[in-house]
Image 1 (cartoon, rainbow, N blue to C red):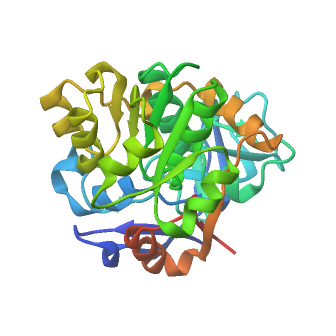
Image 2 (image 1 turned 180 degrees about the vertical axis):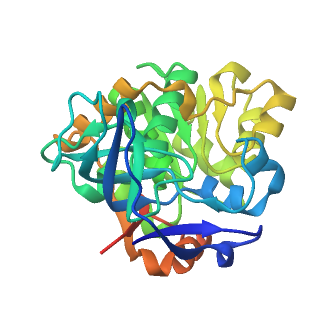
Length: 306
């Protein structure tokens, strides 16, 4: 038997629970993965809270949960090439990741490179692709001064570092506990909250040329008030507001699997940092989501199956 995180009604984190079922069998061109780590993302609990959001993915309750995972290949179906039993792999498979085992199309899997921890691999898919796509969407380049909101969070910390690698100056909003951490990454920290505009202009007297928002409306309102060109503002947090003001709302679907694999290699080499905020046993999935929702997370929150 295997355990799977499910939700069979809509609501907050309390709807997540474990159920038991048969170990799945891979079919043609499929791989069975013994999941070791499953990353949490805000979109997971948002889907579990909204029938409309879940329906947009063609699903209804009861539903599995989670997208990001890493583990060990446990079985391969016919026609699979490039993967063998015992390989350590990672990827993203929405509504399937939080389980002891999952079945995934071979084409969505990546080998875990040496130097990338299994926790980092299991937390990478959504945050990594969203960061890659966000930086590309606003065309970050060396003369830019870029503001990244929630720059210590899972998407923000990667986006800030990718923007820095272009040679741009990067400001990142964060709470006091994460500001020294951001400085160590070459990011200029700015305290979020009331007075943000004044603090941003103090840190960047010449103004901001691009904004990558991973937090929500206050950052977008600031971008509007500072006169940042709409096409140089991207959000993954408030697309309705973005649409009203001509901002971009590009998400991880616009990043390729090859780009994600390249980011994984960069993290493995130590060129980019992906911190793991906390590790929770899968039995405490509700507590893990409550921790994520409470905010002030540095990097990623993950579940482990053993």
